[in-house]
Length: 126
Image 1 (cartoon, rainbow, N blue to C red):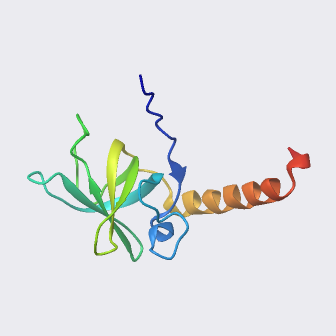
Image 2 (image 1 turned 90 degrees about the vertical axis):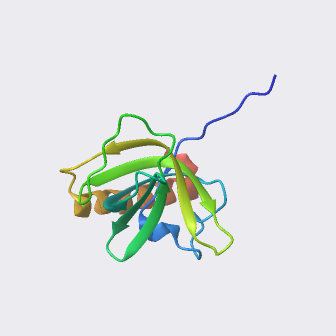
């Protein structure tokens, strides 16, 4: 019997999901936040934005989640790279996070990365 391992989603910003980024990999498990720009009930595709960055999110596996354009959502899932080099997130978890301070969120993400970089370079400090 084969055991399927579900990986935790790496905390990334939409800016991190550009083709030049190390996070832009087929099947990468990521956690992202963005404002819902559009949503299609027919296709289950959502488009989220953060500044100038855009990501399509396939929400077909999500249940009991109501989508409102202009609201902020967090998704965890796997990144699927399309033949045109566009990333689409196959969401397995989603939630509305209206009220979150996106500037503070980005600052905390930056601090987390600085902390991880300093501890990965010097494991004795752990």
